[in-house]
Length: 297
Length: 163
Image (cartoon, rainbow over all chains, first blue to last red; front, side, top):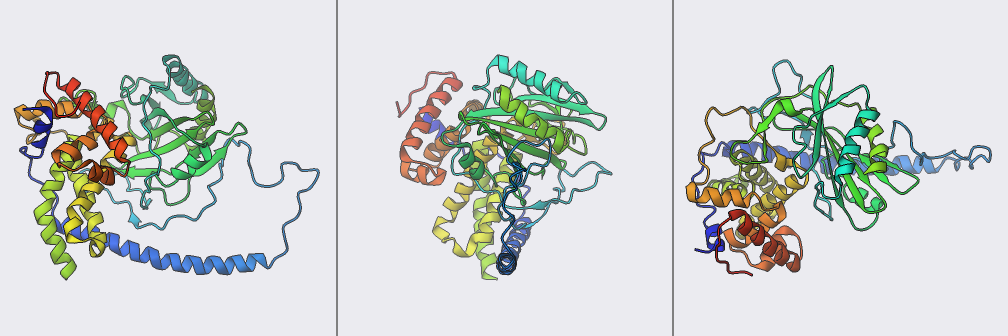
């Protein structure tokens, strides 16, 4: 029997009984339909309100000309330590609010986060991510850099620093241990185009925050997203360099104490612990890493 | 309600098929269940616009693309489990299949998806390209590279229909 024929039998395997019921799917499906209809109605209201507000605004006098003695007057285009502006585009309409699955709820006493859910939009261009484009020297430099930029946080051994797909390490403070995962790839075209292409890829409702550096690097900070199990939290910072290097930083609320190697699948980790209640870095701390990593990667 | 009746019939007959398809892709039953469930929820929302004869392909496309997306976003390194099982999770591939499954999991996600659609579901190159949302040339190269990786991971000299 050749390899292709072996593959043809891959569906005919013994399987555990399914846990999904028709009722559950119908219930979720109806919620989704309701959210889509509500979104359409709200969208119409938003357009009407937008036209009204726009008309009212346009009736006012034109803005003041740029003062000659204030060359930085106007929208921020230079780097700030915090407060990256949101991308100027309308938000998505939420279809619901985060609810943890009953099979893997957050630990007792941990409040359920109130985060609206929106549909993620798959980018048109997709490329592979890994650590191939980061040299070993750069890996060391990255870890040193994170230690230097975040002296208030303990940076230690990774949940999977040897994994080929990403460089990962723990970030610990008094609130517990979380982790940071860094992966990279190469993209064709311009940073701006790809940042726009990936704007809704993580399922944000509000547009991401974005900063464009003078050298053409675009950095995009997505909003915090909850996911299963145990109400896990993550936040993604994307760096698009003008030379085509893409670096993806994923901040997580769990670290190496919360995973263990899967005995059945070498190189794969199983999630066992809930992790900390919040992400290990504030947005200010996380965005501090962006320009620094863009410089060394 | 007619919508619910038709959808219920479709769910009853095809959920396990979708779950097995997802398992062939991800190699993890809990993730496969989640992928299949999400695909059926999306199918329910679009049900009035889906033709019955294309519903299977619709669900399979959602499952495949959701799987590739999850891998691209880094989920492949962490498989969520609600609680630790006391024993190994049962119901996996039987022994002869375990080796093939383990080898399949060594194949990169998009190549794996191309292999599953081409050989497990016996789709043509054109149909595979449509489900993956890529070009025919891309399917050919992904399939060839996927087979090469699979053959290497399988570790035994096996004959193959494709070079």
